[in-house]
Image (cartoon, rainbow over all chains, first blue to last red; front, side):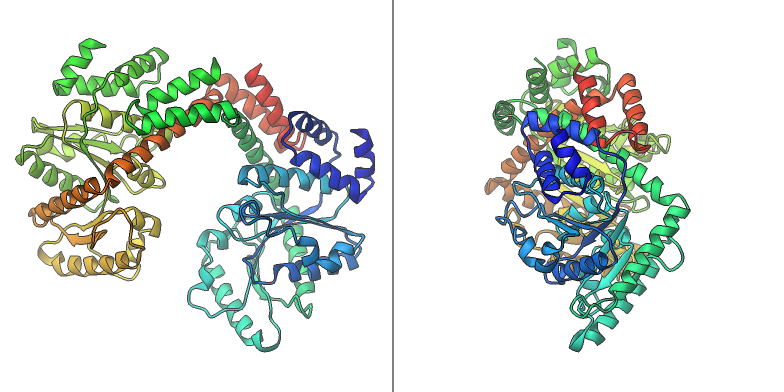
Length: 320
Length: 320
């Protein structure tokens, strides 16, 4: 363990990679090692930025440009991907490093794709633990990116200090089908591709979202004007500096008012409880349990046993 | 047990009441008796009709009128309430029998209020088991009514053969804030109070919803024209006969095409799995476990332990 811990704490990217591979493993002995490693980490903090954007908004280009900007300021930047669909789609996100060619070669950046064989609960734990490893390795900013699919946005927001929604310029009415719940999670909406021919559309889109955000309830953890929307161009770099200033302003305000730590405490408690529940349910995750569950499920489906009766039998079997 | 089983199977309403009280009990020995009783029930089927409507739509009046109509056709009707808020609100639904005075005195009807100390998972199990008891007692129709609060509609739809949404006449644009997900669950939308001055508004509301329903994807388990919307008046009885005809038409079609049994099989499997999960999680439901969970939760919130490390400790404690 120590052979991994020391280089990890020194910011060695290979050690960080190996540590993430360890926490991603489902083998019982690896899991024990992972728990040991995690319990030895010092309490270093990075700014955790959740970033959601559907395919086509230029998320990779944005991360490449924004990440590079941060490294130019002397910050170390880690990028973690949360893509629960990558297992199904055959690893759509495996090309992360080619998507972000410049950043992946940057010695102050670290990019880690979403694990394959991804299942939402597993991805959540893996990502939270990977964030802690990145923090221990001395990274200043951890970007957690996700495609806007199903529950993955909620999950990422629940492990981030800031949650950013990246959108494409688009014609107004429907606000691009962004769900109200997602809007409510966003601290900052960035409309990308605000350059060239798309600039007027991007500005209109920003105005639309700014209006929609004003209709949402003001949140006690926010300073004036937040959440807010503005335009950026990952291609030209326009607006990226301003976006970073806003993130720092919001974070500073939350720190000063105690919201930053309170949110982290709430998140940690939430994930602790979620993991305990997942741990209890993992007893259903053996081949024998799955077979028994399927067998009793068939009996129930064919009316041969009441659900409650069959459930009692299954629980007896698990405890017996 | 047999002293309860025989009168229950003979349709004795007092025995049915006592049996439901038994399945509602959280005492371990009562639970064992309940499991024994449930495993002895014959496989009788009633038509399970889920009914959702927010306060003010005239749900009680509708159930009173519709239930009475069914009993006049020689059918035995049971009414079960699912109101997860009744615990908090101090039993808002305890007045069920006074709300439905005529039906509650009808020898072919049975009305059971939502249990107090209601918690959504517990209400789900209690209601499904009460449905089976009503079926065993020879009831032909079981109405499961719920207020449109949170997850309760999904829960009721998941245990019903038909799901009916009862709405009040109202001015159009927003479709009364009915969520798309709820619309998608409805087999039949009934706009109540279609009488007197409200008749034109009710008709317009029906047209609005009929239009909205046409935009939803056609479901493979439905005949032509379903899901559909029409007007009823619980006060005058207008439209109730037609509503019943539509329910029978839809049910008949689904039976003929195998969807009825397939849906019940899927629901039974779903509830079986839900109960197994709930059973595993119930180990967190002791005073000792709650205290330990709170204690470790505090340590996690204060950064003294990583969520995963504390979760491993909690699981060791539970298993140790």
